[in-house]
Image (cartoon, rainbow, N blue to C red; front, side, top):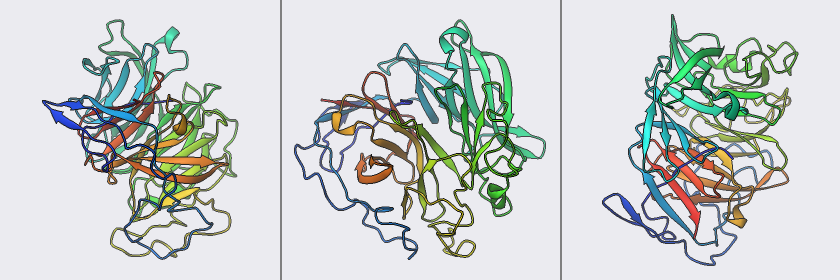
Length: 408
């Protein structure tokens, strides 16, 4: 479990909502539709590249049969990037501009937590992800990632600090890791944070988008375009890099802009989503020491339409995505569902930006076997999702809304 939020608009004719003065009137999805349908994607792909295996893209569509409701709990959360839940069921939500919101369980009240380091909030930068220390109840430590402005540009950094007794500021702040090299750019910070059960901290970093930085995703001496594994102090959580010649913090390489990280609740496998270029958004199961290919292989093209590199999507020595999307959906935060809707159990939920929806993926034996688009008529860019401890699904949107999906 990990995060929060959702919207008040019609849901593909299956969910009926009306809004009066910002308060949704709740409906439910239609009952007992067909469980197996065509994939919901109807647009043509950007490339004619063949998938590496059957079911790697555009898998059969599925439809939820359990009645549920959708609520908008809050519409005034600025520019949220991440949402997590406190042990008392309140929510902690980051704002790109450089502060956090502490939000009540019902979503109606909130206040700012300030005093964090300066952020470079241009374009995709700012205050990004947030995670609680596994021993938060004892030490009150909070971790966050952000685009840190420095001489020569900026980079993805990770800091920690303790929540003040009045819960309005962060104290004793320490930057524990900086994803060098520094680059004067404004895109592709990556930036998800997640702790495993042993207390190790995983950090995703983007390759900063531009052509001169892309090759660093394949460079084991650079921290960009990677999944990293750290101790809570920011040191390497492993004695040596998982690949030959890699820096010791590096867990996997060859990533473009990974903004989704989640552990499967039963297998504890680490799953990741990352943005492709024009086509080729990916879902990967992350294993130590593997190379996930960017920019050597990709199922996408340049935004101009030009081919990338050799124009190939498969090559020996480079790992294939479990699943990919073309056209893109812009997958941001992800979470596995552990709530009260039985047919959603262990399904992966993905907040989509340009796709303006939440995607539900059904997984079996580490493969995608079904895909459903939720809230596709909302017009909202879903930045992050959370399967919360109360059994509901939450999400936050770029427009500052907090959503809740619950069993009816």
